[in-house]
Image 1 (cartoon, rainbow, N blue to C red):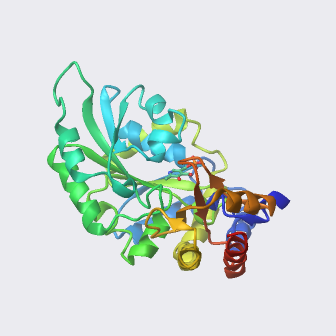
Image 2: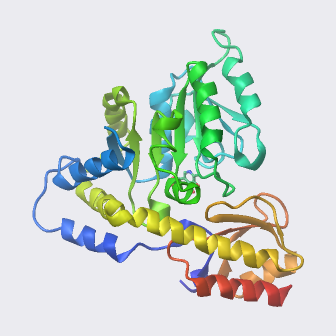
Length: 346
Ligand SMILES: Cc1ncc(COP(=O)(O)O)c(C=O)c1O
């Protein structure tokens, strides 16, 4: 584990919180109905209805990729297309699962600064060859909030993309692997950042922000629920002992643990970002609104940090570019230690 003593590689590197561990232990006492028919699963749904200020349906998933792929499969026919940013996780990091789950729908990668879909590019794409039997039919738009480069779409930016999507008769999916971080950054309500801005289906990420193995799909258009349930079972996502996933999410949603964790992760990223700005030779390359920072580091600095046991991705996107990620588990001393190490190496 020493290689991860200084973990800035991913928010997936963090463990979980005592509240969640305790909830899982409590859920283990006695028998419970299987496949999500237990009382804790019902409680999670109640909590999410409250949090989103409306009736929603909820399906638990074990990964964000499963949530994304199931959502997209429910929102496009096999002859449809998924309009997404070219940097999006669905496009780059899910091993073709969206294409597989949709039985062959085509992902159309779109441009845009800071991993946000450019509205003009979307306006053109939603109309492109619509109704032309020789081409795929534009069906769903997928946006990531927070984005893959650590930015956050403003409510207006989401609304604009939502309006273009709706006017063209398409559906809107949000990859919310870092949903909590985005809500914390915007200081808005979960409802404002999702269904009120036009989102039909949300991949509600929680694993990166505290749970162990539990993410969820939040269904705003509840006519999609029956189909999603069959799809989830076929995808191996209908866990028999669902109460344990539910227990994680129940604790996550209790007393706003989700928001507290996200605020902390964002604060640690802000501390890191401020420190980096002051170090000569280090350049920030994207606006970090949530908990991911992309920066340019001299090669000898990267090598020196790696030699000291720092774990982070580098040279994956561009030579010399490093990605530093904070989480609910990052301590201020971890950030300060990294800054001191970078300063010394610079
Ligand atoms: C933007 C985004 N979406 C979705 C995911 C979900 O990934 P996983 O399937 O590993 O849980 C991730 C994880 O890195 C992500 O960064």
